[in-house]
Image 1 (cartoon, rainbow, N blue to C red):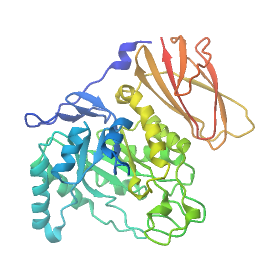
Image 2: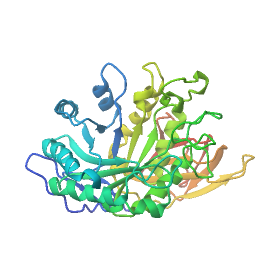
Image 3: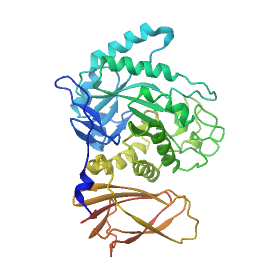
Image 4: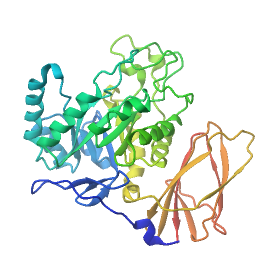
Length: 401
């Protein structure tokens, strides 16, 4: 096994940037590059509701935050070594002159900020609840993209879609984005009352799969939508649906993703080859909610893997042999390998709602296997080891030469 193959990366040409502003580009697999260095994006739409939110976000391992178009927000981001992104909205044909003036004012004021990484146009432009027509047509998003690029060719533009709509519909927006994303929030209590963005069955997603493992399916959908030339992010759930209700909340319906669910969704998204993850909804959680600690714990693991997450996939030939545990096998183990120091990092998840027992094989080049974040060392023998996964469980292994 050739370690040099694992480390190979071919960066695309960097976008032009003024002196003192980082050079931002995109590698051929969609990974963002800054000054030629690949970086996996881990971001927050909202800072945690804590005494030191900027500090805690950075210490947790996040590298991107959504900010207002305010000098003080950019100053805070820069002071904490965080990248920032700003929402701009879009150009409406009915008031194009006013929209151009508004966007021009923001872009020219902040395009040279060292912390700036991305601009965003509209959120979920193709989506209107219970209707089929788009909220913002693709032509408007594309026109906005061209206008922003004319003012600032050095920064990327980000576009997030709702998880619904046909791929063919979403593809029409591609000329208006460098980064394509979708938000998928699968944890909702049975019997939740109707509210914006939820279907009659109480779910936001519309695949047959109602489990948290639908995250991987939406990751694949968005990669098909975006194609190979764009980055793909996923926006994950950091809130309880009932807390989004402005009044008349039912305390019995407040259901947060557990730490285990958060960890699974995060690693499953990574296993499907995404270039970045964002978390939405922290603003809606009361200060004493447990969710920030759970998000921070998962982000802390990714902080330890930031070099590997930014790397290209390792060409690992992995064999999987399943052992009967009394359940059918639906989707089984999903995995990705990334080059690491003296070997590779293997991230694997069980996409089934039942336990799975599996033997990993074909790893004769490696001499040692360590389960990270678990304080155990699986017995690697003759290039194989056997391990168990709980329903929607995740393991991270370090394989050493």
